[in-house]
Length: 377
Image 1 (spheres, rainbow, N blue to C red):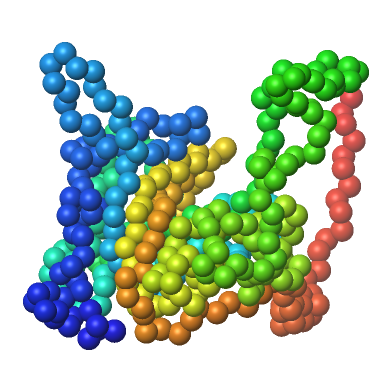
Image 2: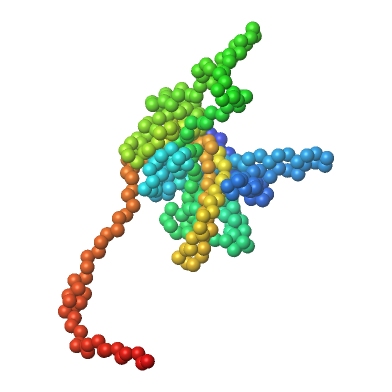
C-alpha cells in the first residue's frame, strides 16, 4: 500500500503529488473569511454557507451558496470510530424501529493517510483546525451567555488523550430512508363527491387510474444489482445487510439507499461498505458541515456542579466519496445485535455479623414506665 502511494511516476510525482489540494480542500477554508454559519433553523440547528465576494457598486449581493468542500483521508480502524453496521455501534434498550433508524449514519474514523507527503499531512491537520475553530467560536458565545453544553465533536482522539487528536469522524449519508409522504397538490374534491374523468379530444386524464411506471415509486429490491446496473437512490430491503436480523430490528417501512460512494469499479452497495472501505483505504470526499443543537427539557446538573442546558453535536457529513487506493485491512464484519436489557437491581447479601450482633444485644434493665401525675385542678 505504502509503495503504491509513494512510487514516483514518469513525471516525478507520487500519488499524493497528483491529488487536488487546492482552495477547495477543507484545510484551506477559514471560518468568517471563506465560509460562515447560517442563521439557526426552527430547531436551532446550524448549517454553513460560502461567503460571497462583495458585489460591485450598483449590483445586488449574490445569494450565499451552501458550503461543501473536499477532504482527503484514510479509513481508520474500528477503534478509531469506523462502523458500517446495520445499527449504531452503541446500542440502547430502545427497539430499532422506523423512527429510530432514519437517523442512523455509518461512520468513518478518518485519519491522516499512511506515508502522506508534507502537503497532504498539513492539509489534514489544517482540516482539523478548521473544525476546531467552529467549536471555539461556540465556546466563546456560551461563556458570554453563561451556558454549559454537553458536546460531541467531530475531531477526536482515538486513544482518549486530548493532546493526541488524530481522527475526524465522518458521517456517510443515512443508511435508511422512509417512503416519501404523497402530497396532493391538485384541487381537493369535496367529501362525498365522486371524481369525474376528464375526457377531451386532446388529452385524457383518469384521476382514478393506478400510478403508471413513469410516476410510480421505484421498487424496494431484495437483491443487490450488478455494479454496471446500479444507480444513486436505488432502494434495497434491509435484509441485504449481513447483520440485519433478529428481534432488535423492528422496522416496517424503512429501506436502504444507494449512496454516491464509489471505487474504481462503480457504486459500492450498502452491504459492501465493510469490504470495499477496509482499514487503510485512501478516499476523497465532498462534505458538508452540520451542528445539531438540542436543548434539554430540564437542565441537567453535572458532577462538576455545572448545569448542562442541552447537547451540541458537530458532524462532517459525506455527500460523495471516491476510493483512490485500496487498504490493507480485513473487511469489517458485524454480527446481529441483540436488545440491551436495562440492568435489574441485584439484591445484596445481608451482613450476618451485624444480624448476629443485633440478636445478641441485651439492653440493661430499665425502670418501668412512670405514672403520670394527674393534672391539678
